[in-house]
Image 1 (cartoon, rainbow, N blue to C red):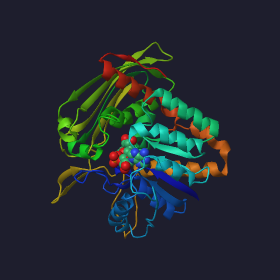
Image 2: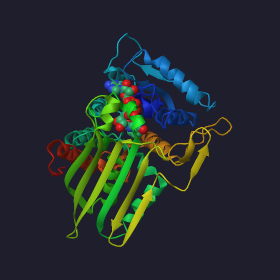
Image 3: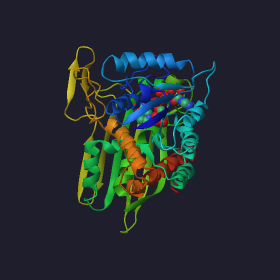
Image 4: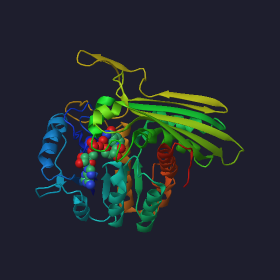
Length: 401
Ligand SMILES: NC(=O)c1ccc[n+]([C@@H]2O[C@H](COP(=O)([O-])OP(=O)(O)OC[C@H]3O[C@@H](n4cnc5c(N)ncnc54)[C@H](O)[C@@H]3O)[C@@H](O)[C@H]2O)c1
């Protein structure tokens, strides 16, 4: 068994966001619930959650008890909390929490994007394996620094790209590799503007919607094209106006990255277009998410919002639902969501950390296994960074990594 520290206690961890009026599809969060179940299965010992506000523990405890404890009555939902004492918020409380762990523990970082780098460095320097919410960091130089630190200390670093565990996306990645030369990809992903209140603290300042949502499909495409194509330039465009009304400051509503790709073996060029928005209207699914991949020998289309599985209720009307991500419906008071790709993403990291505790020699093979490790996700960061620079200048930007 190992101990796990989660830094960040917001929507993705507990389902509790800064906003009281948020419309989230993850009221129970993802990370904490998965960890409670992994502890129930005997894989984990201590679970530590770390935020910034010492007074927040009571709110989190109540929220976890009302949401998770009351539904999944077999789960032990206790956790230690940092900052444990004090009257004022402490953004550096994670440093004390990291010192509270035995070397070789698991640290999961789920704070706003621009804080990932500093926190990840601290965790690696103290000898812990890391899983970082996507996007890992905002620049290639930070990404490369984390790869070096993980290699220097013999540690595992992963990015929580949970779509890599979606069975349909996994299948599409495998099939795409056999469709010959790459020609074109289009991807679209959105969230309703009502959810922008959840990210009010950092949306448009610490990060943007391209880092937040385009990262998913760009990672999938980079996975398909590994060792075959490299991104060459990115030209970005954006829209604004709606988000400003929600967060009260200038913010890009919708961002499109247009990426040019160069074949590494064949003399071939290709391009892809990735659009992400956090000002979409309410629709039949919380998040629209789809892509089209065009290869020389075939084409793949995935519509992840509409899988032919809908639910109509008096409370919410008609909805297309996604049963593959997280399953929050208990069966006889038990959590039965172990097959969800949200769960599998957390579980895979914890299993690997346990494995490394037994035998560190497996680290090189894990790094080369096609999982979303630090080493395997650099091209994604390079495209997102070039997109960010292109937004600032209005010009096409060379992808460098
Ligand atoms: N919400 C999702 O569905 C989702 C899904 C995948 C990835 N993510 C990623 O997870 C990260 C967090 O997103 P979220 O949705 O939970 O946001 P959120 O705004 O709901 O929560 C962020 C949390 O981080 C905490 N925090 C900020 N600085 C901190 C520090 N120095 N030390 C400790 N805690 C600190 C805040 O107090 C807050 O609790 C982002 O990188 C986001 O891209 C979110």
